[in-house]
Length: 263
Ligand SMILES: C[S@@+](CC[C@H](N)C(=O)[O-])C[C@H]1O[C@@H](n2cnc3c(N)ncnc32)[C@H](O)[C@@H]1O
Image (cartoon, rainbow, N blue to C red; front, side):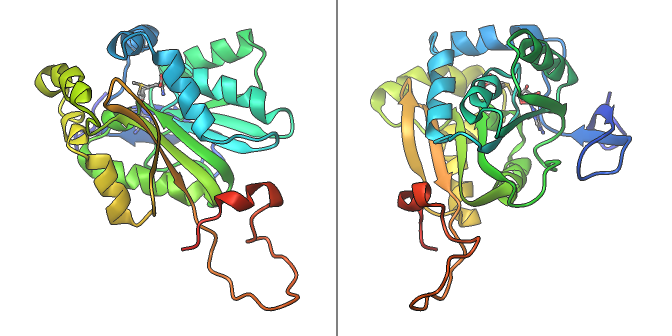
């Protein structure tokens, strides 16, 4: 359904934590209504049969610990979120957000079948229904190329907002080829794929990260030379240290000390 501004009206939702009930969820992102059941198969084909490996690399980059809180944005049928919920255990929490209601239905069905603790909600990346600084990790795989260019920075800022200091933001998607093989493998994407992909093949996501000032980006894995797993770690706020000062909530937990990046 399109509203007068050409924005897709996704669904009427109730019960979100940070918005009024009965809100209309709207986005200009590409939904997969009508194709929800075959998206995993398509993705697997496009990634040369490596979809499972790509999701595993995305999750591994998120450095998930027991008790962590994680949100997977554009979660699709919920595979990554369900795998993450096994890692965080009963003390943690995993939420999958997707703008296509049929995807959320499929994810809920998968979660029930696998007796997973992951929860799924219809929602949009542009307005995540989560409080600021609430998540240890935010993941997204094959999601950004579903957004028009002007929404990509907005979605990334939202993901950054909900991260705790020391939290990890993982973006797995089509990107600038990192080898000659990547240039060749990405050729079909340049010629015959939808318009939101092509700027990413010219380094759009890396440019957004730089412009937004999110700090150093790590490439933790690359598939087919152009599908990359990017990791950003949210810095802790600068603190004035004095001798004998007791620790504050802004200090990194002991196990995470090695991931601290000074702003
Ligand atoms: C290609 S699928 C990726 C699914 C899954 N992450 C995976 O790797 O298999 C992209 C998903 O992004 C969702 N999407 C599109 N626009 C969105 C938005 N603005 N907010 C949240 N999800 C959105 C679509 O509904 C679709 O399920």
